[in-house]
Image 1 (cartoon, one colour):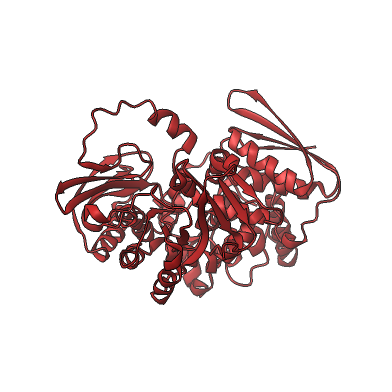
Image 2 (tube, chains in turn orange, cyan):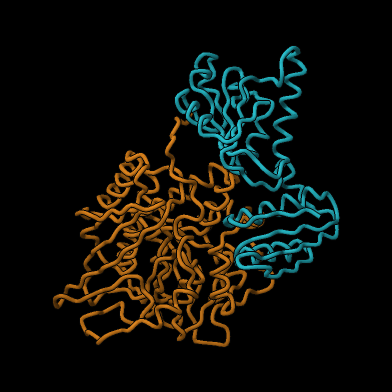
Length: 352
Length: 202
């Protein structure tokens, strides 16, 4: 039974990565920023679309710097803290790095019950600890609504950084988490999500990409990114970087089963539609791809999985390792030579 | 024609409310939905396309877009026939105080029937209360076995806050049977009633 919480976190209207600014708007602003002089030690972050920067400080050592924060997408403050932290830490894992330190980023209404903030930060701290990092401080400001996240510093060997745009023709695409958490949270907002679906979404969102990243590091990886607010197709579009095309195998996409029902019931986020507007013109859906699958592929993910491009011949070994570790990983597509259509979604695997 | 004013509502609420309005048509007809952003227009149009409804949209003012849907045939929504919700706008500071499981007094049998109709009728209103407070025997209505549970779930899904008096649950040994909303105390209830602009007691 629920106890009364008179100062409950205001009902989340589009929390998590669905709260991201649309890619179109963002690009317009970013393209006008002065870039300054190029520093050869900045290995990632100058002109790629990565949301982390990597700076080389010694021959075999670079630091990864990243931050991420957003409004609540679940009602439980502790879980929200865990999810926001897992999501922020993920950028380091997407680079192939190790988490070292983290700082809290907090926006909190002055009049709200401080115990709620306590729970959020406990959830976040637990995830930093699980990541093997140190929570070293933070910054809090008053705001009209709750937002929480982390600024994270990690380390990586410069020779082993995963950029998001260095995939090669023929590479297999591996996804390490199920899609559909955006749809499930959206359905939950209107009271339509089943307990089971919400439970699976929360478990997925609180799972660190640490294990996935560590497993990938044992293999050859050409490119890697984490799938977050722009959805699988949005992040794949960035990975292709105008140099490559890709095929996505609809029947291989791992997703939370109920997400399909929620898409068919049109419980759709604004963010998914923004993603469709942004990359939809680059995507061709083969006939026979159901509407719900389109929505799942555009679905914004909060604390989504890693999307890795690995040499085709290694794909089975990578998958086996990821699945043995209990991750719902799948081989969801392949990179191809640049063609007329950037991304083609086909019903099933077609690359042999 | 049914008009749904979903301005100020985030996705998926405009779509959910429009879908419910189409259901309420019960056959061919028109639904006009007002929204305040273009993305919501696109999500509505997307639904219309999938459902085979005719849709047209225009910007009618700053931050107002109008989407007009023409539903040709009766919508087939057997998969979700159990939900009975209707366009809503919650009215701030309006509180419904449910102090008994009957409406009126004198004949309890009639009172129970009236309560059932009252809660159902609420789900059909364009303007909804912000909060519903249940106490004394009213607390039975938010617990297992309540005849109005489904309608309360509909109201909760549309954003109405449902709270039940904890002392009342304890006294009637219902503490483990609460099915919807949260538990509160008399201090909180007093405060909510004092702050309310309208208190409605069925």
